[in-house]
Amino acid sequence: MKFSKLSQLFLVSTIGLLGATLFTGCQLVTIDFVYLATSAGTTKCGGGQIETYAVDSQSGAVRSAGAAVCTGGVDPVALALSPGNLNLYVANQGDNTVVHFALDTNGVATLKDTVTLSAPPVSLAVNPAGTALFVMSGKTSATLTEYALSSGAIDSVTAQESLLIPGFEGDSLVPTAVTVLANGSAVYATAYDLSAYNPGGTTSSTANPGWVFGYVIGSGGALTPTTGNPYKAGVKPTALAADPTSRFVYITDFASSQLIGYGVQTANVLGFLPNGPFKTGAEPISIAIDPRGKFIYVANALDSTVTAFVIDLATGTPSTAVNTTGSSTNSTDTQPSAIAVDPALGRYVYTANFLGNSISGFRLDPTAGSLKQTQATPYPSGSKPTAIVIAAHGNHSTQNTAP
Picture 1 (cartoon, rainbow, N blue to C red):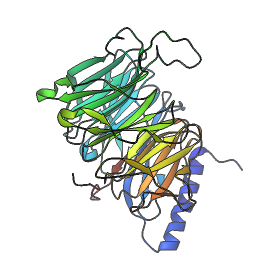
Picture 2 (picture 1 turned 180 degrees about the horizontal axis):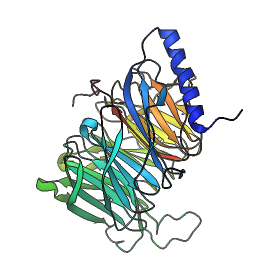
Picture 3 (picture 1 turned 90 degrees about the vertical axis):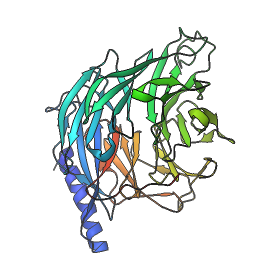
C-alpha cells in the first residue's frame, strides 16, 4: 500500500506523539508553530506553499497544524516573523514578490498584501519594533531595501542602499542574507563578489570575495553606513545572525566551511572576534542562535549535519558543543537548507531539508548546548523546503537573555 506525503506526515507524527504520551503520561501541549516554505509546486499551489506544524512540549515532535496555504508568489526562498508573531513575510524569488500573511492564534496564515521588487528577493528581516521590513534582493547587484510596516502591512519604501565594494564598484555582487540587531540600532547584510569568486568560471576582480555591510538605523528609518563599512567576510557568506544582546554577529562561510564571528563595537562597527574563524561542517548554509543567546546552531548542506557551538558570554567566542557520541555534528535528513530554534522554551532545534523533503528535529541540552534527535524525526514535509521560522504559541513566553 502506498501512502501520500501528507498521509506519511500524519502517520509518523501520530506515532511519535503517541509514544511521547505513553512514556511521559503528559497531555500534548503545543508550544510553537513551525512555518515551512516548500518551493516545489503542487496542484493547489503552483508556485510553492507555506505549511504549518505544531510542536509538542514534551517530545519536540511536530504534527500538521492545518492545511497549507499558497505563498502568493513563485519559488519561496525566505521567511520572517514580526515581533509578537502576528505577521509572516515570504520572499518569492520566482516572481520578485514579498507577501504578507496575518497569523491568528491557531497558527492559520491569511494572505494580506504583496509588494513587487525589480529583482529577486533573497532574504528578509523585521526590526524589533515591528515597524520596518528589510529585504535583500538582486542576482548580480545587491540592494538593501527598507519598507515601513503599518500594523503588519507592507507600506512605502523608507530607505534603499545599493551595496558596493569600494574600489570595485563595477563588480557583480550576489546578495545572501540580512539581519537586524535585537536593540534595533543597526542592520547588517551579506554578499559575495561573483567577479572575484566564481567556481568553475572565470574571475575578473582581485577584490576580497565575501563582505558584510553595516548600517545604523536612524530616525524615521534612515540608513547610515557604519565606519569601516563594508567588512571582509570570508569567501562566500551565506547566512548571518546577531545574538539577543546585540553584542555579537556571526556569519557562515559556505566556501570555507567556517563560522566567522564579530563583536559589535561603538557605533555598531564590526570587529573580528579573536581566534576565529571557527570550523563548521561542509558548506554551512544557515545559522540560528538560541533565544537565551548561549548557543549557535549551523546547518551544513553538503554533509547533512548541524554543528553546535557554545557562546562565551563574555567574549562571544564560540566553541563546539559535543554530543553523547563525542561529536559536535548531528545528522539531519538530506541537504538542510534552513535552521531555527523554538522560541517558547528554547528547547528544540529544527532544520528544513531541501532534498529530504522533511523537517529534522533535535532536543538541545540547555546547559551544554549539545543536540539529541527528537522522537520519530525526520518528519515528512512538502517538496523542496527552503525556509523555516518558529512562532511561540499562546501564552508561552519567549526565552530571553539579559545583556
